Image (tube, rainbow, N blue to C red):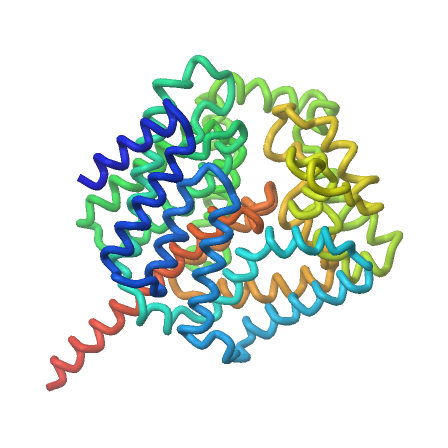
Length: 460
């Protein structure tokens, strides 16, 4: 019955008015509240997960913020365990403050940076430990919410197929996100879910439900037409594998690398015609290559060219919200429609020289996900410098040491996507990433506890 209602609301939201999704979200919240009887930690986590269906990126920030605040006090997050992970994260935060202060960043930029980066910093803080949150939350209920997100996006993709495919040249499949260009965000959200279901299937090969969900994720991902992100998804999984190599795996990986050119040559013939033509043009036309991969040029400017001219920028960057994060781009007035109606544009020297002109030239031009001059790993260097990048990488290495391969894949795939887009600052992506790692960690802890109990019974 629940999924029938989900399908009905998805159809109404996509065919009549996207505002219906907000009513759908409220009904889902009401169901959680009726079950929980109070606004506890589990309620706020489920609320954050359900906010992923909404066609905006602001309410998910709010609900993940509420979950973080509640988590902070319920699990006593203010009692800091100075692990190597937490130390590196706190040093990253310190560098961010120092850089912002020394660069005299305008308050409006700081404000939008804090809002847009909040889910990322909350995720980083809570990733230090999941133990206490697990004890306060029924993980089966959280898994149900995650499943419902997948089914809602599958229903939306089916409706998109009937209402948009063939009538819209690009971006016909965007789920419930309801905006041109949101197909990339849908791809990232669903790809992260697919890795969670991969874990569920590998833990229990008889779990056909998990296998079916992996297939559904794959279908939705393909309908987004996000071929570059599909490649980066594969790269992220490959890197997670390589960073976990033992000698036996090294031999297998070496053989795969040797065979890779032949595999790519054969695989190229099966790609859609528009993809084949794009690749052929990139190999033959340097102008077209620069157009499609202009972001790589901006990476070179950010990591090498500008630092060679400015020591402060090299070490500490240009300050939060003062280079090309989403917060900085919003403050230019060239990124969102509402900003100029409420505030005066605030553009730093670097943003004006290296970012805004190209942003204005390509606004509304399809290009590719790599043709736009902003990405989280680029903004990281631009706003906190080499020092901030170093502490971030140390934190990621510490987080990467989680035992499960699926968690390593989640982290590496997310970072691969952050090379191409601002997924530090998309709350839907952070929420799904957090929920997936949380659930895997919780199931692992549950399995370990069960194993210990069985061992005790055997010993007795």
